[in-house]
Length: 267
Image 1 (tube, rainbow, N blue to C red):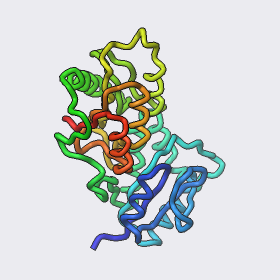
Image 2: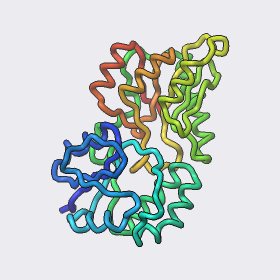
Image 3: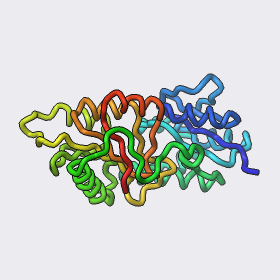
Image 4: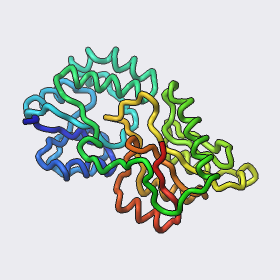
């Protein structure tokens, strides 16, 4: 029998969905990081990995999932415990790269402690969709061509560990998701002077970086994404099948129906 699961929770709806589906899981939150879990969640500090490991082992945890939105935290070196202090050189090296480099380091740290790190999609299989999934109007040939162009741009950027989203209209790239995230990208596109916008409405594409560890950094869309795409005047969204999560699915699909946008999954 598999050992106990721990949910290491940050912001957003995903940790709540995981907790609902796994009521016996140990819920962990972090100081200074907003979350929507209940009062039963144990609060820990990023500066004290030793205390966190001790709590996880003491609770019989053998599996864990990291879920939710987390900007890179500001750490207080004066609060480091001995375990964290020993990990600092590795964590600092990871922080010099992109998000994937840092998260890969974090995964290896937990695995060395004997924990199996799972992806949220492994615990909630309905988070992703398969090839051919489509809601709303069928994307036309222009939208399909713009989606291919956006996917090519993301693939080219993958080795640099940059971005999971791109907007293309009429073959022209209107924006790439960077550290600021999807909302910032779509806001930037919405604010673009119409003189620089092609006549084609355009498509937002969300896809995982090649070689990305999807256990801790799988791309996701949700109701807010739909609102951002609509505000940006785009025709719809194209996501990578099996490698992008749809959070709060009922709300997301309701927002799609109201907006008239399409959401399709293509390789």
